[in-house]
Amino acid sequence: QVQLVESGGGLVQAGGSLRLSCAAAGRIFTINTMGWYRQAPGKQRELVAAITSGGSTNYADSVKGRFTISRDNAKNTVHLQMNSLKPEDTAVYYCNADVVRSWSERYPYWGQGTQVTVSS
Image 1 (cartoon, rainbow, N blue to C red):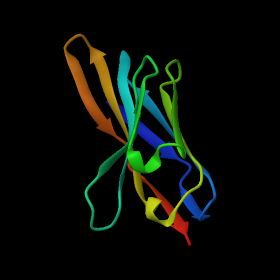
Image 2: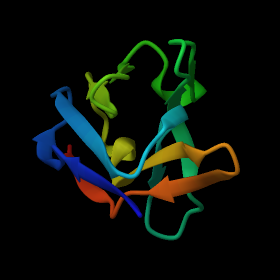
Image 3: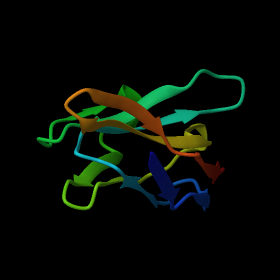
């Protein structure tokens, strides 16, 4: 089994910063894409940012220039540096990882979610 453990959420004022971290542990051969999604009350879960094992990144238009995703392949971790936060960034943030456990086992895994609240 594989577990994703997130940390770093919290309450911050508009304009502030937070850094989210996610660590994958368990039977892992390699991890392809890792990413962060978010879900606000009454809205669908949406992609915030993703990063491939080679370091290619993809961002939602709403966070470009403010958020930065990074990863450490050796430690199976992914981070999301969030700057210039806005109230509309308020949501539960979920870590996602495309995990390869063997030549025939590849599954998406999700973290438990961490709350980010931005006050105006």
